[in-house]
Image (cartoon, rainbow, N blue to C red; front, side, top):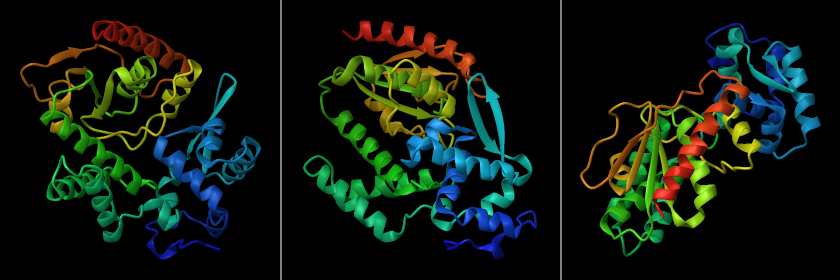
Amino acid sequence: MLREIRIHRLESMDASLDDVRLLADPTRARIVSLVRAAGRQSVTVLARELGVSQPTVSHHLKALFDAGLLRREQEGRRVWYSIAPDRSDALAGLLPADDRAGGMTEDVIARMVDDLAQRFDGGLSRETVERYVRESVELIRARGADARESSRAAAFAAERLDALLSVERPAVRPEVLFVCVQNAGRSQMAAAMMRHFAGDRVHVRTAGSEPASAVRSVVVSALDEIGVPLGGEFPKPLTDEVVRAADVVVTMGCGDACPVYAGKTYLDWPIADPAGLSLPGVRGIRDDIEARVRGLLATLG
């Protein structure tokens, strides 16, 4: 079954009938979507994302590589897969509709509003909840199509509403906001470590001045090496209420993107951007961030 592959929407003739048949397999189509969103992916990460065995992922990756849709790069004992540059546009058109456009219909948005209005009942009005949900939907949509667009928009809206509520109520624990440009590397590593080291003692948020579509897979691998989980985190736009809710705002390479409010601690960490680096290069950045996070945690008591 072709699962809504719309050949008439292709803007290029680079896509062959063989490509169409290859991506008619839902697992292969999902693999291509994940690789395209992250820039590159490994067998280990793909298997975890898909919930299938690594041999199954390797089988599909070989078929996609042999067809010239993916390219392969050896890095030590790990192999990375990325979209072949000359096939990117054709693949975008061949991806099934549900992998390209998310599922944020008006019914889905209305359900988000209902669920979050109930969650924040007594603290925020329904009108406020709906305004933040719809604004969050637009901000997530602006970052490009994503197969998990709806769940990410709901999570983003919930985090913003929680921050808004924190501004109006006395904080029961320190709140730290980590900000970098794409929210796909440095700030995500710092936040993951702070959550892991501090547990419930510190409330942690992240944001990006120009958020990417996904956290870099090499960042996930670097964290995994030291036993720090990233969970379901994803790049999020920087919004005013998360800054106002924070006690400490840590910036990394995003200049003066953060608004400044009195009574907050602002720290700027001069940390190299991991974009484009291999795992050995990211390890040094990770270790630098770890030392800084531990030092910050000590000051928070």
